[in-house]
Amino acid sequence: MADATDNAPKFEELAGLVKASFPELRCLRCGHDQFYLDDQGGIDGMRLLHSIFNDPLRPVVTLACTRCGHIEQHLTGLLRQATKPIPKD
Ligand SMILES: [Zn+2]
Image (cartoon, rainbow, N blue to C red; front, side):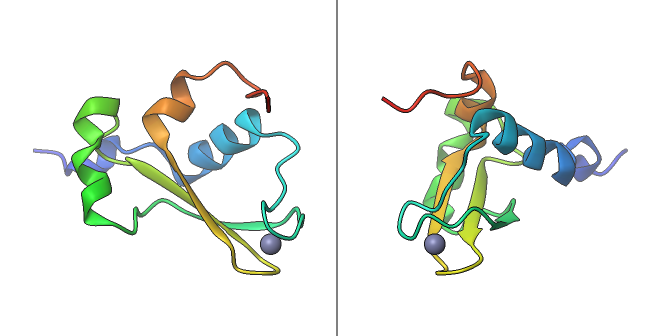
């Protein structure tokens, strides 16, 4: 039996998903344009949402500004479904 993680989207795919969604991504706090990216949700409760949003292996993508450390998280399933780039109203 294959390890479940074999079916997980590649880290690069997640980076591409973020880039396609927010081509002009800037830190919400300081305006910086460089981020660390992580595929581990920081809160266990987030994992409860995975069944709703249909991405059980990578439910949350986390971005951390490399300048100020501000962290933002997106539900990966919703990010995938969204028309890209995602407009900012
Ligand atoms: Zn920042």
